[in-house]
Image (cartoon, rainbow, N blue to C red):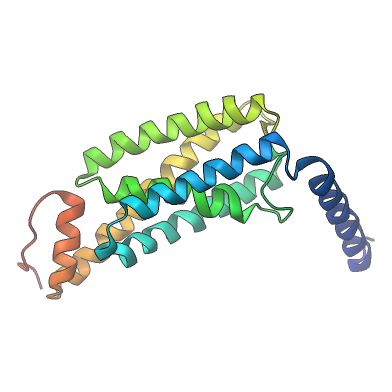
Length: 204
């Protein structure tokens, strides 16, 4: 029988092994600096372009994206679909990398500048293709920072990426519709930004 103490001991040994590798092989490596630069660029772009009047709305959308991303990414890690070899921090999953920076920040900008479902889908699908097949499956794989470990992993990652952008936007539209129907003019304005048409309080 496996005891809790055995599991804790093995977890401690694995964490120590991860930390030792991160400190001696990953931290300050060329790959690590490239990931840091990408994160900083994403933050600069986000804070430069973000609409400060819609900041709460955009951050709520970004929170949905982050939660979905970390859930599916962690599940993929657990079942051995992919693995990250270079991370910004030794913490797993790497909260300071794609989970809370690159993917959510860029997705929030796409959300901000997409005034219709058609425009959002076109831009977001293009972003997902570049992210999965360009950044992950080419750039990170070739610098030995990431790897897909199963034949279906790339396809699964791409489909999951589509869902973590489309589903939160659908939730935002649905929530704004509820508020607009109950007389919230701010919600009407926000909804008009997402579906490219004026909203009137016709339904109760």
